[in-house]
Image 1 (tube, rainbow, N blue to C red):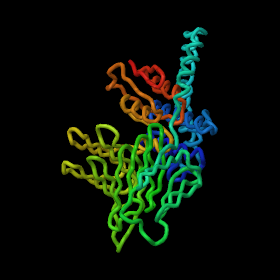
Image 2: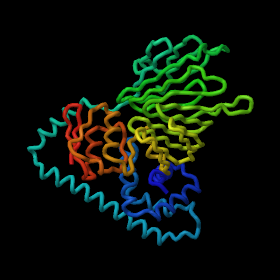
Image 3: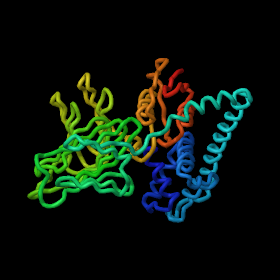
Image 4: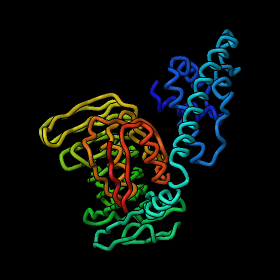
Length: 398
């Protein structure tokens, strides 16, 4: 079981929503994980509790409660598993104590003279804030709507259709009356650096837009095909549509890739030198301008390299790919360059690499709404990199 799935099951157990079948899966997965894996999972659980201001897990009994849950099979040896779980928990507690000790030692070595410098750094980074719901819509006639300034639960009535900013801050489209919007008119939603937005298209398809992205879409879709154009990154939950017993395909075009689906959930990232398409559920067909095509299965990712025009298909855990739309940065063996590109877009900062760090990797998870100083310190715990903040510029060093 992937780590992301394990965390999801533990969170289900903590909020009492886990099914009996999933409880058995969770118990079996915990038995197979190493102490290092469990420590990594524990750190994420503690972090997520702090982020949501929820109650932190019971550090002495959580894993033990899972292993001894009465819903598990009767022949489950409670005494044996209790000993095993207690030993693992001791490892977690010992590791946590070491981290606390190290922090104390660093503070002691720095001494009181470092206080002024720390205040200076905090003053510098006070202007660096995490992103939020920021976007603008360019209407068919060129008029622009600043969605951040538009009040929630507001409906804008336009010719043949309406745009509704809902109470939760997302945008929905509706075709008004029986008349279709004339001429295949399109709107464009644009998120800046430090922005994200959710939009529901007129066919019911839901799109989550990541920072620095653009989506062009028809106000009213054609009867035989639904086509949108994407730059940047977005997560799609496509609404199934039928006409005369046939599914109406939904097509997402980027500069060198065309993706066709009938009804599914997937993520497309086309920021840099590659186009990454990750399928969460359903099936999609991706085609490229070099004539290659491939059908993806759930939990598969296609990475198309623009320059070489090569395509690689791998199995992945979608948890890490779509964590951004759920308010988190989540990485598993990601390059520091990839991590800092995500940070730069979301916090709207410039990142400068002072050293060659292409071989350095990072695994971990943290809220996208965390203070940037804490986020960078979390990455620094790997011992692979150091950061220095200068205005809105982040220097990355060995």
